Amino acid sequence: MSKDLTRRELMRRSIAAGGLYAAGSLMPVSSMLANPAAGQSTPQAGRIPATIVDGKVVQPRRELPVLHKTSVLVVGGGPAGTAAALSAKRLGVDVTLVERYGYLGGLATGGLVLGIFPLYDRNNKQVIFGIGEEMMKKLDVLKFGIIDRNKAPIYPTIDAEAFKYVLADMVLDSGITAYLDCWGVDAIVDAKGAVRGAVFESKSGRQAILADVVIDASGDGDIYAAAGAAFEKVKSNIGLISRIGNIDEIDMAAGRGSEDPDAANKPLTGKPGSGRPSRGRVSDLNGHAGNSTPALHVNWLNMVGPMGDALDVADLTALELKHRRATWSNVEKLRQKKGNEQVYLAETAPQIGVRLSRLLEGVKKLTVPEIRSGAKFKDVIGYSGAYANAPEFQIPYGSLVPSKVENVLAAGRCISTDFEVGDITRLIPVCWVTGQAAGLAAALCIQDKCKPRNVSVAKLQNLLRQQGAYLG
Image 1 (tube, helix red, strand yellow):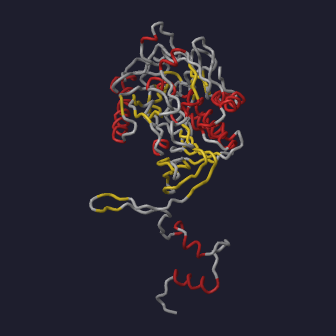
Image 2: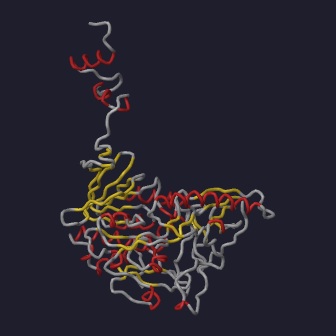
């Protein structure tokens, strides 16, 4: 044997001769040698790098590995997505939930949107129940989980970390297959244009999840847009919420606000309460203290922010950076008030406050005249509470169904409404409503072997009532 024979070559010859196993293990050393974690680098399956051809960047066509196959795929783990996944799973169908961040709850947790409104009608009667009410009841029993429950017109305020825990606990107990840190980047469509799943990007590379029905709860309508569904692109205010510590004052009221007798002649704008978050430029934050949270001596401060394009990465980047600078400046100004010298910035939301970006062109578009007139819908799937100068209103199932593309439903802020109504249906409790309905409708598609647009509305409404939803 040559004295220059390497240790690795010796091991390979021994393996070929009779098989060699690692000490204390039944794993062949050949497997260890092939394992990148054991020191050998191998290309990741499915990875084909982009190339430059004639000055253009070209991504070669390639086969994507299938990560999972499921009956119902929910893209987005915010309020709408978690409600959809949980409600569908309770009908016994196979459900997969995919979320781009490392936690569930979306803007209700990572966005620090801690106020749960609109829950009540004009007479201070609660009109949103179902899965959302169940989630709040779980927060009720947690110390520092939620405050101001059942105190209409004051709306409840949650703790983001408590809500992350509640959602993780519910999903783990449900049997839902979940993937976090996984970004939905494309739709999978068949030869007829029907949605059959979605493509995701993660540390595991680009992978596919195949599904019979997909619920787009991404917030931005990313999947239905990629599948070719028609939509309206809109711009809205984009802000950044923060939490302020060691504070004992508030300058945002927690009430819903009084009804405006001239509401029919005014646009649907405004936020609940007599106090308002700063509007317009981020520099308008001028020593605001915000509103109380379940955590002692900690407030949450909303920022409306300027108009921005939530589908433009340059816009989002500029706003993120400017908002964080403005938020720090706000705390410095707040410290200048007597008694606030020890105030500190406890947290800025890791998730920027996008309000609206895409609005689906659905079987039914919900409009301002309809909600102001108190329109009733045969396919009602729930209510929104009263908000600013808008009364409570019904939400039709048709607002969740694309006008043309099959096998996909929308839930959350990207459903089919006009712009002003979308500024209400984007809110957390209303996202619970549309999410729960979308989840049950998707499950019915599996059980009855039908398309979302052909779901039995009577069955859907009966199931919603069984799960505690309020339909009027």
